Image (cartoon, rainbow, N blue to C red; front, side, top):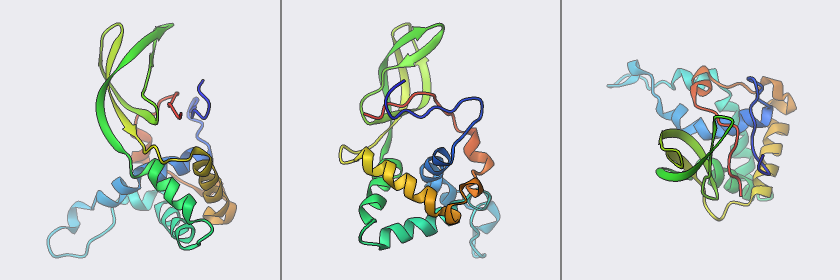
Length: 174
C-alpha cells in the first residue's frame, strides 16, 4: 500500500477518516437544500447537513482559521479536501487477482472508475494543488480530531448520504 494511503476495511472508519469525508462533502451538504425551502420561504439547511457533524466541523474550522498560529493548517486542509478539482482522465490499469489497480497521477485520488480495457481505464479523479503540504494536512486533521466535540471523536458522525459515496482502498498521496 502507498505511504499515506487510506484503507477502509470491512466498514471500519476511523475518526480521521470521518473528518476527511466531512471536509470532502461539506460543500455538497450545504448545497443540497431542502426541496421545500425554495421560493420565498425560510431557507433550510438540508438533512444531510444536520445528520452529520458539519456544524461542529465548520465551527472548529473557523476557530482554526481565526487563530494566526493555526491558519496555515486551515488553508492546507481546504487546499487538499475542498479546493481541488474533479476531472475525467484515462489511466494505466493493472490486474492482480482480478482486482484492478489504477495508476493515478500524483496528487490525486480515485472517485469513480468507468470503462476499462485490459490495460487502461477511464476514471474520475479528484486532484489537489501542488501547494498542498501533506505534513500540515495531517497536523490539521489531528487538530480537528482533538478539538471537535472537545476530543470526544466518537461523536463525529457522517450522514447516511456520505456512506453511499464510493470508497477506494488506495489513494495516491504523493
